[in-house]
Length: 364
Image: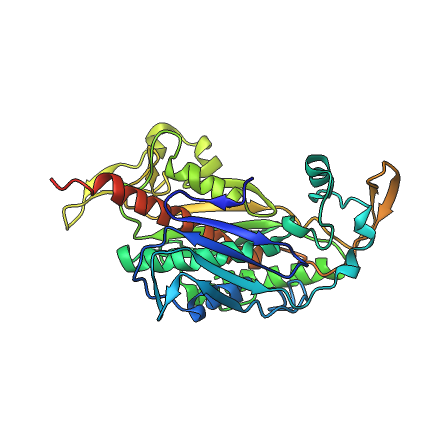
């Protein structure tokens, strides 16, 4: 059914865009982890609508409620349920979409698969579903930070042809959050904001690329052959709404290099650890983390729902025209940053628990 993700650290999200609420259940979280609604709320606030002039104007507080699995501020090893109630719904904006398919949206495919769909705001296919992912990712981040000091930072790398210059090895959360574009290259961020405002005013949308780095990831995470770490990360981020491409390390640019140029040569650092001079592998070799920074990029398409008139058909097979109503992001990139971080955190946390269980059960 596709609503759950992960093995030992497993989330299941629920809810629709204009229903009563959305949320997540988290199973497999280790007990005695200190966690609060405020820590989860910090990540949800980065994702929520209405936070700036370049995102959807829908006003939602996205206030989270922990319903189970936490007692006196600590996890107790049982399923954690987190709920966010929808408050600012306007289902009447979608009356026309009850019969007209939005181009490049999930309307037609949901009808083809299920024969029924929630057409109010896209229902289950809405990016509002990602609230559960970000809430689960907040807990995964806390585990990773506490166990291994792992730090996961995403940022907007490119919007259309405007590309930022960012050092993933040194970028900070404060730099990312210093502007509404979530681009740590401040000069570039200004141009991105200007471009998004211009496209919003025209009733259209644009896409771009989110880059994300995970630092201090322990060596040994990943399960060859089919559960390679980069394969699971790819599935995780490619399951996000509007995602259309994935790269790790050198990515497609690596195809332009020779083997001698691309190989990451080894050396021994001052602590006796095996390290690499370069990081074209993106922190993963043979499907297993090698201790270097994991660096990935995710391409997001322009938002499918736009105000411009487009040709489409109805669910009864008639050709027609649609200019969508509703409140939508002219560019999903700024709000996609915490979503990408969350999905990478979920994968790393799951593989951390899997690695601990397989490789540290028997003591040598």
